[in-house]
Structure formats: C-alpha cells, structure tokens
Image 1 (cartoon, rainbow, N blue to C red):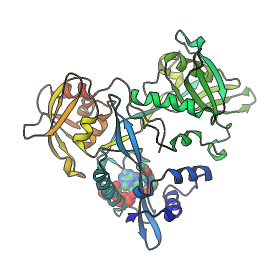
Image 2: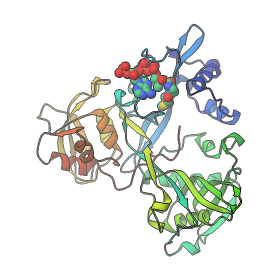
Image 3: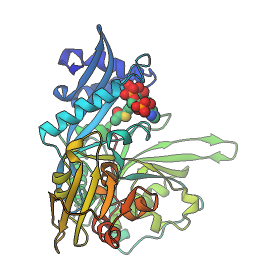
Image 4: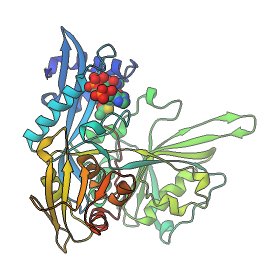
Length: 407
Ligand SMILES: CC(=O)SCCNC(=O)CCNC(=O)[C@H](O)C(C)(C)COP(=O)(O)OP(=O)(O)OC[C@H]1O[C@@H](n2cnc3c(N)ncnc32)[C@H](O)[C@@H]1OP(=O)(O)O
C-alpha cells in the first residue's frame, strides 16, 4: 500500500470502476473526479503492477450544530478488486487512512456507504438520512404561504446562474448540519450533465426564484422526462437540487415544478427528512416519502469533535466510550455543556453516566439521531438515572442534518 502518484490515477480509477461492477463513468464525470482527487490523500494497494485496492479522501469543512464548519475527511473511492476481496485489504486501507486523518488534525471522517453494513466496524455511524419523494402531481395539491406570489421565477442557463445559486447554497450551509461548505471545483458537480446521466430526460434546467428587488433567494435544478402512452402524456420532473432561503421562495419553486405541462410526477431523490414540502402537500401518502441512510460520521479526535459543535441544552455527563479501531478515543470523557451550549470535553476518572461506542456518538453527532432512540435499541447504556435524557436533549438538534450531494 502506498500513496498514489499523479500519473497512476487512471489505472487506480479503472480499478475502482471494476470494483463497482465495471461500468465506466462518462468522460465528463471521470474528468471531474480526476480534477477533484487529492492525490496526496489517495491510497493504492498494488499486486505487482495491478491496482487491487483504493481509498481517497476529500478535504471538506462540514457544518455542525451551531453553524461551525469543522474540518472533515470526506472518505471516498473505496474499492477492492473482486479477486482480492475478504482478505483484509479494506481493513488495512481504513487503518492507514484513519491514522493519516488523525495525524493531519481533522477531528471528523465522513462518508456515504455503498453498502451500509461496511463501515460500522471502523467506527462510522449513520448520522443523517436522505428522503426521496415521488409526488403524484395529478392528485397532490400544494398550499403555499403568503408572499409566494411575489416571488418571480426565471428559467436560466445552469452555468450562467451558478454564482447566484452558489450564494444561496453558501448561506444555507451554516443553518443545516451535515452540509459540506463548497470547496473549489465542487460547484461543477451540480452542473454535471452528460447524456449518459440523463436516462432519456432533458438536459439539466435551472429555475431561480427572485425577490422583487431581483435578489436570487432560491433555485431548483431539474430535468423533464417525457413519456407518452395511449392515454396521453405521463411525463416526470426529476429534481436534482432545490435550495431556498425563505418559505415563499421554497413554495414558489415547488409550485413551479408541480405545474410543468405534460408531467404527472415530481421525483426528488435526495431531500432533507424535514423538508418543508412535507407540510405543503395535501397528501403525504401520494408524495411517497422514503428514507435511507446518507452521511456516516466517525469521530477521529473525539474531544475536538465534541467541542466543535454546540448543544441545545446544558449537560454535565461522563461518557464511557469504546473504540476498538481507534483506541486513542477509548475511555471516560467528561462533557460539560454551559448555558450557551458551548462544551468542554476532557478525560476523567470519574464514574461513567452513559456507556456507548464511538459509532453511536457519530450517529448522534449532527443532532438528527437521538441518543434516546439508540438506547432503546440497546446501543447506549444509562448508568446514572437521568443521564440519558440530559445527554440526549443536549445532542438533539432542531434542524435535520442533510447531505445535499454525493461524493
Ligand atoms: C466510501 C465509499 O467509497 S463506499 C464504496 C465501497 N466500495 C464498494 O462497495 C465496491 C465493491 N466492494 C468492494 O470493493 C469490497 O468488497 C469492499 C471495499 C466493500 C470490502 O473490501 P474487502 O477487502 O473485501 O474487506 P475486508 O476483507 O477488509 O473486510 C473487512 C470486514 O468487512 C466485512 N465486509 C466487507 N464488505 C462487506 C459488505 N459489503 N457488507 C458487509 N460486510 C462487509 C468483511 O466480511 C470483513 O468482516 P470480518 O472482519 O468480520 O471478516
């Protein structure tokens, strides 16, 4: 195993495509990910001159409860050759990678898992969910808040409107945990539009929502997939992004997407689980919400991570943490949260109030999964009566964490 050389990237990426089943990315996607790869953070495992294992990391800053942006390694491009699997190659990549992340001083590692069963053993816990909706717009109506009619919508070129949309995105990042602040080059990901990614739908379109003074306060990117049968048109709107800074802009964008001629369905595969849409639709059942795990979080430097976020209620608890893969986090930690929600986390010899693994702390970290619910599953143990409620209330957030794009 060794750090990748820049001129090995294509062989390394060919290996990764093979591990994922062998369907090549479009040239546009490949070029984008090549430009985004941080070669110095990419590991390759070689058998002779064949690449048989890979793992990479993007250098992200992730929003956490309270709005701070915390350095986080965005673990990515993990793959092991089909003929080298189940011999510990992934385990050795994870070992090296987490040691490197720790040495580099990032308190967090985050990833989206191809298979949710893979990463728990390495201390990652699912911390945010994504909701997919598929709304039958022939039967579901939207009720919109006052001010919606004052929003002006403009269909714009996705590329030319990018700066306005990025301003909206940047304003949202500190308001919702789990969003990566945009790093240079990543804005291109949302504009990726090779014909191979469209599945028969139109090229990517962009609609922006403006206030009366012309300020852009929201946008949606989408494609239209026409479909015709004997009864007429049954087209679909496929929403890839929708971000808005106020309720009126949000409602105006959804109302537009619901009303596109010749379409019957609006499909949005990656929405926050507390999306306002759920409260605007007349029929939540016919909006068919479904959830899945999204961002998995690993506390690499437990104390730094816990001090980097703020908390919703004061607390003074001792956590007994197990962490077999990163034993530097093991042991008892006293977490003291003051009235402003600011925490100090220090090692202690005092008796423990709660017992849990680093994985549960990762799950609760962004405020979307409660320690109480993890305790109900037997994953957190309360050793002092009252400590569970106290800690769970402190960790829980008001806004559901959300990862708006894959990586
Ligand atoms: C962040 C990302 O990039 S996610 C993408 C992950 N990559 C993929 O899914 C591509 C296809 N799959 C692969 O490349 C490989 O099978 C990998 C990377 C998932 C696993 O690599 P391997 O080298 O086989 O893993 P390794 O031998 O280290 O296994 C470690 C443990 O994880 C388990 N494991 C490995 N893959 C899986 C899985 N998909 N589901 C459940 N458990 C798994 C192994 O059984 C083993 O458990 P054990 O220690 O109890 O025996």
